[in-house]
Length: 527
Image 1 (spheres, one colour):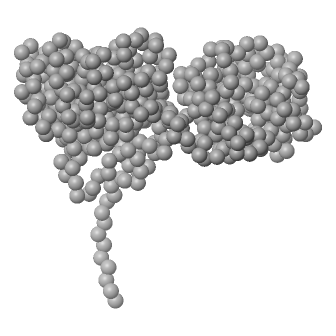
Image 2: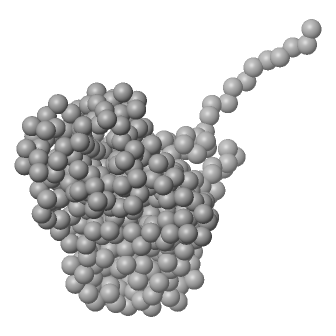
Image 3: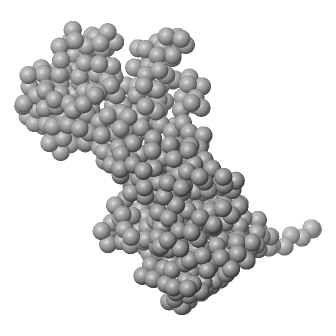
């Protein structure tokens, strides 16, 4: 089950209900939070000496619990308190008073000398600020954050790196660059969006005892996709199946100069597990790719202009629309006026469909009329295309990626996959799923065509639209990570991602326990 992501307000409400309505003592929650952080510090980093830097809110209270627990276990603790004891929260003061004499407390006036004060610490704990910040961090806290980052030591952040906005993931001023973040109850949205992906390091979700019905509230509609979710979405493959069992995909793609988009889409569909792939390209594109797409059924489309698809293609396409289980439409088809008219006709067909690239640009704001489609539909715009679909600026899209994707999904009644770092996949009912995988190597021409082929192949195999989009995004990112590990982000291409799709599908099948196994025959005799 995908992990839920919360805003700061949602987490505060869970905390409030747990304490005020369910009777869970706040000090007990703080104690558990501190214990989880202490466990990560000792188990992941095994330090001899820990420097803990605290602010004045409940985040500081958690840090003081960490200081006490680590000191009790024999770890040397140097505590830099950035405020006076009387300025701590009530829970913070109580935990401050529990500190043992073994904890070395350093005055906040020592912030400029932090390099010397914490020089012999193996690791730092950030307990300065929690999820409530608005705007850039300045003053003593900002200075301390900058100095912590400059020490070059591992940093474990409590709940969220200080300076990072819990909802937007933006670091507008000084922000802790953590090695590990131990977040309480549920991960905050900002941990995996915008700057959060870079500032949080490894994220550890700490179960500190919030009631399950609060953390699993269906009104929390934003989720983080994991391998288990992608694996669970893969259609099962009966051993008695044949190519018809595993679906057929019609890929409508390509134009003069864009044969690569057609190739990458169809080639990925062939790798996705689909039984048959029909590659409907302009005749010239088919001629160019025949020797490379040997497994696909070629559907050369004669057009009046010869170099791009027009309404003349309908006669050729119609029989394959009858045969296909799903359609992948758009990569590299161009935006000629006649092509746009063909797209208008194609999206009226009652077939599962992934609509990408030039097909989206052909539709423009007419995409809002896709509400008439009864069949599963996935739109896969990049931010510029999303802006054109909604008639807004790209900067507005990027400023609220989740809100924008959710808006289009709701208005058009389709699944929307907004590409980019932390790809967002939105359902018309308001649910939104984020892909945690970010990889600059995927910021290359052709990467989106690979994604379209993978989603189209999953649709053809019977995957529902939301599951196909989520699994496609995650596995595409995983294949990109494999390519990055072997080649490097700078040098990898979309073709390198394509070549690793089979391996990640196999990994997902093994995760789900559905990988095919060799059948063995042995003899047994009775004596």
